[in-house]
Image 1 (cartoon, rainbow, N blue to C red):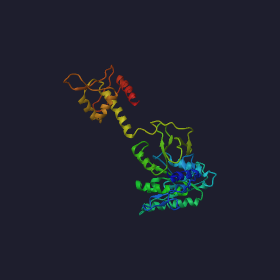
Image 2 (cartoon, one colour):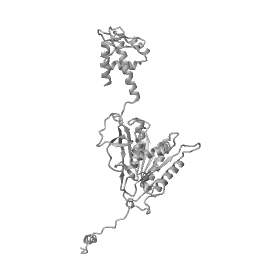
Image 3 (cartoon, rainbow, N blue to C red):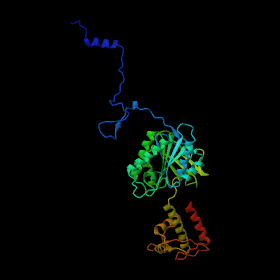
Image 4 (cartoon, rainbow, N blue to C red):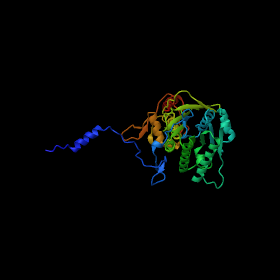
Length: 396
């Protein structure tokens, strides 16, 4: 029997006796020291060692609604006071006490500089800290190519450098600066211009606010699609809208914020040429952003007119359905509208006999209105009272 120790057993004892020594931590990524480097392939795709990247600290201005170093889009229909809102933000930036407190407003020539100055004065801006960049009227032969858009962005960047302390750039409006005042810009140029502005915001650490016009009311399919396109590029998107419930009241609603906490909806009015914010949070209702469309208003008016005509037509007694629809057709009332009006009034055709014609029943009263088959309907007496009550129900 061998008395030699088991080598594996001795090795295990020696290893257990040694103190534990951790290996030095090293990066698993073998890349150059550049923070962003293209790696054997597309120049549009790069890898970055995040350990070498300084974490960002987002600084907010305009009451926490606009971030420095990022692109912000305020979108809305014409007449939602986007320009006055942006002027208010520029005036607020100019009154700052920090090193960067200047603002540059890039406007089109359809907004004359004297009018812009009047708006800034009304907003109590320190006018020496605000500058303007005007987009001129298009000239024959002007080509709004992608290269031309690059030159516009470069010019705005140079203007910001002239300010030396500019922390806010406002583009009023996106369609004009991405195209021209004489023609609407295509979606591709709009997207390209936004991307270049987003790059400029990150590079210069400037807050860039772009005012964009929606081609449909808030909540419509067109507006929803356009907002989605804007949100695909800009990290912060706001929707400016008119309050359908209160005349003269505007709403500023958050659509997207990927940089920090979402600010709540706000409401404001225009008083003495400037923005006056309402205190407190806004409670949204389903009717605020969904005003009735022109088509639904017209259909409602048609039904009300058809209801008036129907009550008068049946006041003298039942009328055969074919005759009633013929008379309605001569008065410009479609069969569909007449059926809807009858349904709203609780009327429907019936048969007096199994093989008889369909008839619409009438209303009886001591006083009956007169009906002219050529649409000269008049309402009086009991029929007029009944019609008024029924129409009131329809309106409600």
